[in-house]
Length: 324
Figure 1 (cartoon, rainbow, N blue to C red):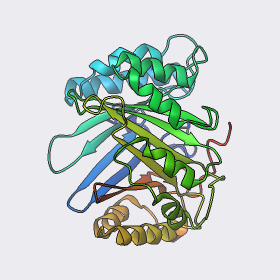
Figure 2 (figure 1 turned 45 degrees about the vertical axis):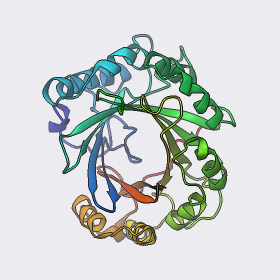
Figure 3 (figure 1 turned 90 degrees about the vertical axis):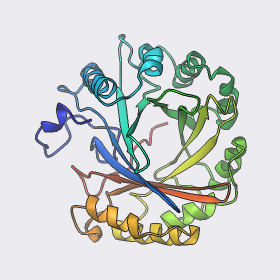
Figure 4 (figure 1 turned 135 degrees about the vertical axis):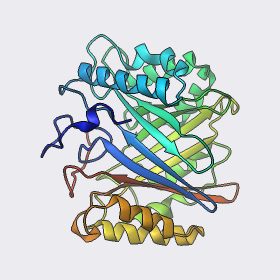
């Protein structure tokens, strides 16, 4: 996942400001906790030789070639939409982010995150709609459109996720960034998925950020997940609460996450253990390690995920994605 770019020396400031972490770091760690298991994930962006999108495309292609040839990742569905998200004509922004998922129950799995605004020839919404159609999820677009009911400016599509797996449970994910939205409103929208249990999001946002109401400094992110087995109805809807601007330190964020886990009935010992392995400094000396957290209850089973920056560049990262 880190070859060959991972051998480079870390510079004082990022030469390529990655979309993976708030401070531009190209590596993010995360873990998903349920009552009986822990899943470890690593998200990366292949750092290009030169700070431009064409070079990023080349780096991504090399990395993905290694995943499909050497690690068992399935590349057929990615190949079907490659020209949409890695265009030859005037590409812009990031090329591909990719993740490995590691669990005790089986072999590693891989997925990619693609850029809906890969160039100006198509809008992000049009590009994702075309991708869904090519992959056999065209009827799911109505759920996406209804979910973004304020329009794709305020409910902006920001990533298109794709499992590098074969089979009916292989997922696609449409990610949104929601500007100036009340958590209660987003919670109600998430009922587009039959599995969503509404009524928890406002309290979760307040517990994790210490803020009631809208999170204007750093907006909420969410996704809708589709599988072939689920058809045109999203099988899940998940919200990611931004953390790094809403506390003075990672120690405060840690305590908030532990409190949420306790309320959900999830032990926090594995979370704290993994956090101690990720952190390279005292938690009170910055607020850049924790990036997002998500929690949901499906069929009575709680699950919480936490996301950690490798924090290669900044312990106090600024707000990102403010432009609309």
